[in-house]
Every structure is written in C-alpha cells, then in structure tokens.
Length: 122
Length: 107
Image (cartoon, rainbow over all chains, first blue to last red; front, side):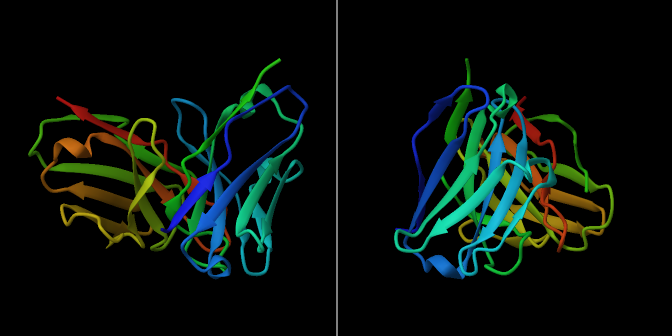
C-alpha cells in the first residue's frame, strides 16, 4: 500500500529540538522527493523545504534555513525533518508530502502523511 | 511569490456551481496546484499543472488559468465537497507558497 506514516506527536520546551519521521512504503523510494509542510491549528499551509530521496540534496525555505535539517535513510525508506531552537510559534501540525520528482525542488504533492503535532510549551 | 485566494469563505447550497479564485503576485506560468482539506485530515491533491486532475478526482473539479490568475471550478457541489481549498505555486527555482485558503461551507 502506497502510504506515508509519520511519527507520533511531540511536546518540547522552547529552545529544544524535535525530529519527525516519515516512513514511506509501497513505492520506489528514490524516485521521488519529499516536502515538509506545516499548519498552525486553524491556519493555512506553510512550506518548510524539500529533499530529494535520490541525491539527498535539499532546498529549505529561507525562514528556516538556519535551524532545519532534512535527511533520508534509504535502508528504512524513511525521511526525517529536524527543527532546532524551537519557539512557541513553531507549535503546528507537520506534514511530509511526496513530490513528483527527485530532481525538481518545487513541485506538487500527491501523497501526504497523516501529520505530526509538535507542541512547544514550557 | 504571494498567493491570494478569494473569497476567504463561500456559502453554497449542494448542487450549485462554485468558482474559487487564486492570484499570484507574479507569473507562475502553469505551475499551479489545488488541494482540498477537511477538518482533521491532511490536504488532498485535486489538480496540478493548472488543469490536470489527480488520479481518482471526480470530473466535477476543473482548473483553469495561466500566469497570475487561476480558477478552481466545482460544477455541481456535493455534500462531501464542503472543505477548505488551497492553491499552491511551485514555479521552478522559487520557494513553494500556498494561498490562504477558501472555506466552502453550507448555505
């Protein structure tokens, strides 16, 4: 079955880091890319960046450039997104979303994970 | 690139024709997609490349436009279509951006 299954929700203190996992299955892992998108509850969608599952090159939104890292693990066909120096306004649902190309950094997403709620609270 | 959707909310009766608008602050060529999101769910791809329906998407959904002005049309709104709709631009070598969304609710 073609799907993306994300890790469970997390609670972190301000200043801490969080690493969200996105386990893929049912398709050829390195033929696609993966974007990460977040959504503050009740608000719209915000693109965080993209990673190629083939070459592992990345493209991060400028806003997150200095505190985000996306990686892949080909052996487990899992993609990871780590966000550091968390702030209260990072509280959001984080989605992984497959993109149609492992080359093109900006693209549409046809397959989404279920979302991971990251709560930043003291 | 800033994407602006209008209206923010649309109240519609089942069976009506619905037209949602999305405007880009600069040309995005044909690099435009539409998503549907229901409460508690992830977004679902409806349309990409302005007018290509994603697999499994009913024919009542159609997209049009080019450059900076785009439209999503639902020819006859069904009960399962009440949701929030987002446009997304993915112009080559530009950061991806989404519109603020249009909520379609029951009149």
